[in-house]
Image (cartoon, rainbow, N blue to C red; front, side, top):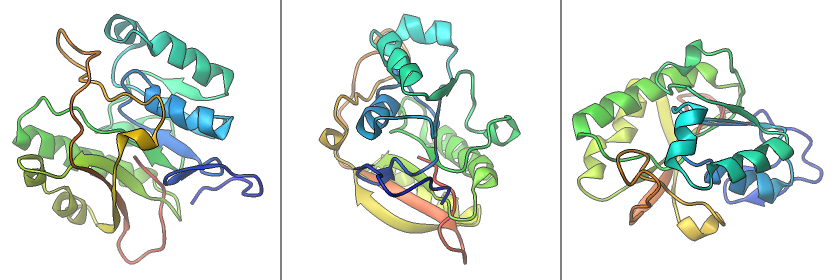
Length: 207
């Protein structure tokens, strides 16, 4: 599972300070900051964004503050990382995280993005790793059929857990694009889907 020393580990929902965690698709980095502040250290975390650092500053009011917290706690932060081609990136941690996805594209495009994410993420999984995706579960989002997409890439659904925004203090979901990129959107019915390789024990973790 890529775990570190578990003697004094701290937990927030599914995530422990003993885990090695790679996060994709960060917006204002409030999710990774939430984990890091709970753990008291982020030396075992790598947080990435699709946007450049300069672009982030123009989109999110609190991103500078969050990045400073992550830096102080030892997190590795990398920008311009595409989750659909990440297996070609020099970053190779063994536990991964993807916050709730932005939902401004058409369903067919979203399915292609998720399939590309699974295809690349599984190449980063260690012996005991998992891939986590947090996603809306009501129509039309249920039509993405992410469990089916995962199976097509040789991944098995291990667990589906309710996602509640208030379980992650100071995390704010962001639209990410357009004139209101720093705005939030209703989370509604949402779940964290946990996947691992079929016929194996726990693999690397991607959220």
